[in-house]
Image (cartoon, rainbow, N blue to C red; front, side, top):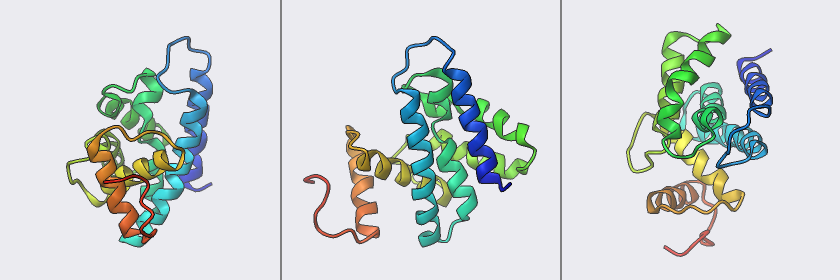
Length: 165
C-alpha cells in the first residue's frame, strides 16, 4: 500500500477513535474527513503544477489539521498539532526524519497565510483556502482571501472571482 493511502487509513482510524471522546468540537468530525481528503487531492494538483513532490504534498495536506482533530479546537490548532503529528508519522515507520519534519512544519505553519514558507508549506496553505472556499466555508481573514485570489489567478479560473477584492 502506498504511503498516502496508509496515512489516510491511519487518519480515518484516529477520527473513529475521537468519535468516542466527548469534547466540544469547533468543526464536526465529518468535516475533518471531507476536508482532509479533498485537500489532499487539491494538494496533488498544486504540487504537479509547481514541481513539488506530489506524494509529500498530498500527505501534508491530508494531515494539516491534525491539531484540530486532536484538540477539537480551531484556536492554535496548527501549532498544537506539531508534536502529536510528528509522533503519528513516526509510528508509521515509512517516513524519514526529514520527511516527518517537512510534513509537520507544513502543518504547523499552514495557518500563517501571510508568511511565505517552503514550497510544501505553500501548497498546504493554498489547498486549505481553496478547499474551504469550494465548500463555502467563510474565509474571514484578509490574508486567506488574498491567498485564494492568488491561487485563483495561478489556476487561471477566470475573472469570476469568488468575492470582491
